[in-house]
Length: 391
Image (cartoon, rainbow, N blue to C red; front, side, top):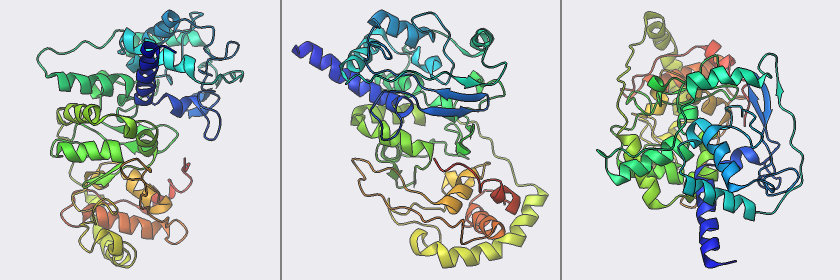
């Protein structure tokens, strides 16, 4: 292998990690890039294709031109329209040089002979021609165009966040058609089927980053933990598979871009019912917190470094959506094991130990104590998430 080829392949491997390709195109424990991973959607089940270099079932017979066309236009080499679970609405921003490098890397990995599975979508969503309408509404083809009024660092961050990172796929609300409004980009939304809430990155009320330091944002992206909190659920998988491997410079650029996103300022005061729920649940929640939570998170929610994140002034606790704190109390979990945090501390589950009313009480307490500005929740909110998928 020539040195130039090796450097292109190494660049492609780095970019494939930035795009988190392995997450969808590999089943955990199976050979990488063989595809076949089931992705539940509101419209049915999609199965990721084999993108290993197998000639019969993967990308072995593809050309670099065909691969770039797929990334750029969302069409297969035969011209068929791809379902937008493949984030081509973001990948269209990827440059030709970067697409070629990713393709060179994928051609270098061991081939896996595994036939692609047919997609299992309900009628009428199994009619790919309907995607023409979806694309008219939600797909805007074109490589990323740098903003000359911004710094090179900001532009690099924008390229990674809007392009390969496809961050808006989760952090923007998805409507009934499976699309996202550009005007609502990065304003947060519930991830369909997974029942985790991807917080707004534009609002200081949620996980908006306007008052975060660049260091705290960078730590969260690269290590999965920071002085301001930790990642769990789907974001933990993103950090584990992708972000922990990015360079300090690229993580810093992403932090610069994310911190500069405009604030939406969407503060909504609790209504009368929520106020009454707080008055009813707060004393019980305080008692449970003192017995079960204070040892790790501190009497006043101050936390203890990276291992036990603070709950006071923690925006992810106070969001309009209470899904994530409820799920953490019910199911517990670990931040991802990363190069910078190889032995993460986890939180135990309390689903078997606490009733719906007790979980509602302690979540209400941490959302409203210590000058936190969240709203009270109900036992019904908790019960609705007891059957949520754990992966």
